[in-house]
Length: 373
Ligand SMILES: Cc1cc2nc3c(=O)[nH]c(=O)nc-3n(C[C@H](O)[C@H](O)[C@H](O)COP(=O)(O)OP(=O)(O)OC[C@H]3O[C@@H](n4cnc5c(N)ncnc54)[C@H](O)[C@@H]3O)c2cc1C
Image (cartoon, rainbow, N blue to C red; front, side):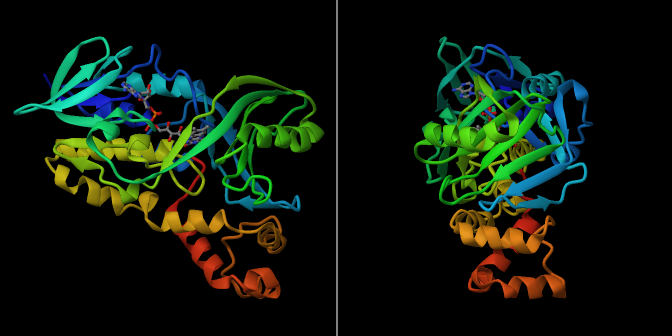
């Protein structure tokens, strides 16, 4: 019998386990962190929110620049001095595990949860039963906690990603996001450098992901970085829209991807997983579980506005994406508040005709803290 059982030892569950004594983390994996299904990007702010000091032991590359590339080939540079990191996620999660007060049991796949008189009983595939007053469902996109106990409509975006070896060097301080409504209609393509000659390259979308990925490699990667070798498949699912579903009932919390809490705009989920995992612990420690959902949904990272921003951003035709880059001139397009910026904006016919929509989009992105991780 524990006070809390945390299902899942990803970033959400491990952060929860850091703050809760008398708790147990159950995970189906053999080894913490493996396999990785992630681009491993994380913003600097995400670590500072958790009070974690960055450590080269679990960081692959230090990112200073974020470049958005539009169909014309022009670049938009997003704000980014000390923007963040591409993690070594296995090492990062192992580091988080060393900080846990919770007991961690691996190779313990949870298959069912049942309410008993004064507690919850958690059943594993091996036939073990553990009991606790509280449950934190941190069991990722295919969460058994969510499936068995909650419902609700949320979004699922498939992704296709490989760790790729490249013949020529990549700039290890820069991540790149490629937007093209015609070639990659439902999500952008990313290049996150892991070392001088390796990068996580992937895209999100609903169909023909493997073909679109190959097209990107052949037409964009090969001309710039030479031949490539696919090393490890890191594809997975992005769950979003959790601000629209129930995330707490009867002493059970849903956090991280289990709660579909990935940023719907850029698909970063590690920060949101850690924030939501920690909020659940605060609710337990302060006896304020009833406030968990309200508090979480009032935070900018989980704002309903982000769903609007997602809808608008991924509906922009290439002509609009190109015009945004034209007026940004290698600067942050969100900085269009001054007069000369506005004059340039209204000189572009495609932007003018969508002015209201675009200003709303930029203002949401600016205040939401949306990020690559
Ligand atoms: C291809 C791809 C690229 C991405 N890139 C980025 C990125 O660059 N930056 C970023 O911030 N986010 C990225 N994300 C999202 C990010 O990976 C997730 O948001 C993050 O991992 C969420 O953490 P979590 O702890 O909620 O879930 P997870 O990391 O999925 O952890 C869930 C844990 O639960 C365990 N589990 C699942 N079911 C059970 C069960 N029944 N019993 C026991 N244990 C169980 C799993 O083994 C796992 O260890 C990406 C996602 C994908 C798919």
